[in-house]
Length: 355
Image 1 (cartoon, rainbow, N blue to C red):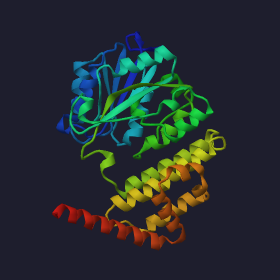
Image 2: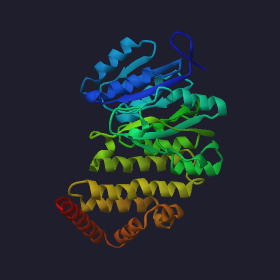
Image 3: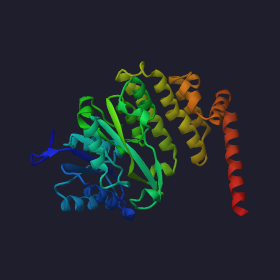
Image 4: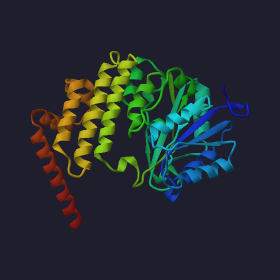
């Protein structure tokens, strides 16, 4: 059992990576939801990732007001969420570890229900569903409820369930993890990139043996203009590519590449190439043909037959498959066709707005 600094039992460590979340009360709303949890014996480890606003000042206020619950860690160089999470894990004392994004929040009984499910079932990994919201509220009816994992991924995990979790691990912040599994298997996050969960989520899922779900939307995922998902840059596209490469290399190092070859092939192609290609073409102003060529070359070097993968054939949309096949024949043709397609779509939207 984990021990607190006073020698008591520590059930849970909640790790909160923080970077410039002071505006509009975002960080306060997150922290208020955490200090008000309905369980005892837990700690909140808030890791300030070299914020340039007054996020650290806000965190210090919570540390002073709740010294028995809140610990603040900080360092001078921004390491992105992966680095902040790793720092928090190294300091964690709890038997269980949870993560939360610092612009999100959770229901007051979130951790009580997840820990209760773990104790009831013997699970070493527990999650729930979440609610997408655009305002600070605890009312699920004010947003859109999203299923984070499916029930056929739960229970004692056999190889088939592990394959499903590897393919679709779900969000890592909407779960709690048995700390001993993390430590015994040296699990961590890539540092210095966006989309660190794209690598870690699939890798971590293979080490847990029993996954359960509380079928309620207890986590509130805040959508706002500063959210990572709301704007696309080439830097972010490259980070997703790096996450896919890390996933491939770590699977090789940990001995999973052969046993999960089809799943790894599809997951790599999806992250490195398919998602990145279309988000880049749609979201980046003035996309470069050279980058499009680079994507095609990169996936071909590691998984040249990915278009024959049964997961690809089943899960990738028909239109996306057609466009990817077009790129396979001619990069220039694909690029020009897609640019024209986006221009036509923009004109139609403009016309629709006029009438």
